[in-house]
Image (cartoon, rainbow, N blue to C red; front, side, top):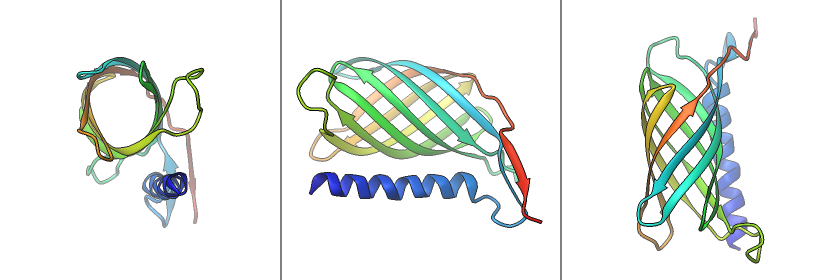
Length: 164
């Protein structure tokens, strides 16, 4: 039953990500302005070090209210591999996001099935290299706090087309 709930939550979250990035604006013109791959090193407080790789896609806001984006990434550390998906809103050099995290055991350590899932909240500040702080809330466990440094390489525009 747990996996059914997790897959339903993941499906809803992916739909939300797609609406955020591609649904702005719905009439007139749609564009995906940037893709931004990144590599991160950091530490889960009280647990140990990690390395992450991620890719973010998003759009630049025409109304100066921020830049929406959607991220998918993987984090590797001793306890297991975390796959995360989130939506974010950035403003010049700062941003924040919310998403989900799925934790799997390291390969060769028994099963390859999902062992935990939870909500992920993140904040960041910088330009091309960002200081990061994220919190993972797993059911029945204390908050897991992570600090890190991520380097990104944004590029774009990816595509743009009009409906009219």
